[in-house]
Structure formats: C-alpha cells, structure tokens
Length: 158
Image (cartoon, rainbow, N blue to C red):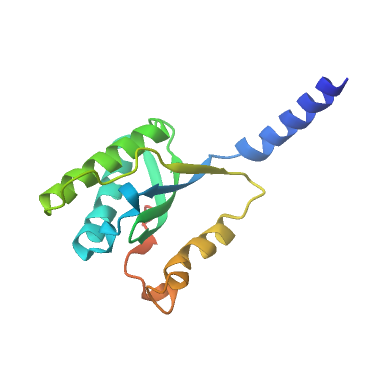
C-alpha cells in the first residue's frame, strides 16, 4: 500500500516537471575557480561560444550572467536537440580553444557542471532575478543593469 501511494505521488510530480518543454538552469565553473572570465576579451568570447554551441547542438539558450569564475545560463532543448552534456561539451571545448587563442594556458573548466531542471511550479523569473543580482552581491557593479556580461540570447521573432 505504501508503494502504491509513493508511485501515485511520484507520477503526479512528473506532470509538474514535464508538462511543457523542460528548462534547465546551468552553472559551469572555471578550473580552481580562477577568475579568468574577468578578462573582457574572454567574457565577450564566452557569449559567442555559448550562442554557437546552442546552434550546433539544438538548444535554446536564453538569459545568462558571466561572473569572473563561473557562468550561469538558462537553456531548453529544441525538438531534435542533442543531450545537455553535448551542449556543455561543445561550449566548453570552443571556449577553451578561444581562451588558448587569447593566450590562456592550462585547464579552463572544472570537469563537471551543475544543472537544475526547473519544475513548472518554480518561477523562472524569480530564479533569473536572483542570478542577475550575483554581480551586485559580489561587488562587481552597483546595479545588475551595469554588468556588461549578462543578457539574453533568446531568438527574437521578427
């Protein structure tokens, strides 16, 4: 009887997760949390690499914030998307090549990344507001709007 109750509750929660296209909140940290992304050139290249990785793997990448030692972004797969690991492999590989071209040597990224599947009862907007304030909490700028390495890569309908 307890198993039946667990299964019923579990299946009910699946509806909260998968009633629409899944959206993930992702964080990738630099190796040893070194502040290599504080370099304006690398931060700018990161945004291009993120956009290109999304195009290559079939993921929609929306809002992002680049911090000196990590990046946060929200993403969701298109219908024919490769896995989230493919997106991260493409992104980290391209960014590592860009960093080397800019003169950075050594490992750029921690091997793993953090991902959180947003459930439909979670507020994307509330999570975004929290994330975009990271630069303010870390003393990088007075207001989130002042941070140059944050924004939205969502495709625009025209």
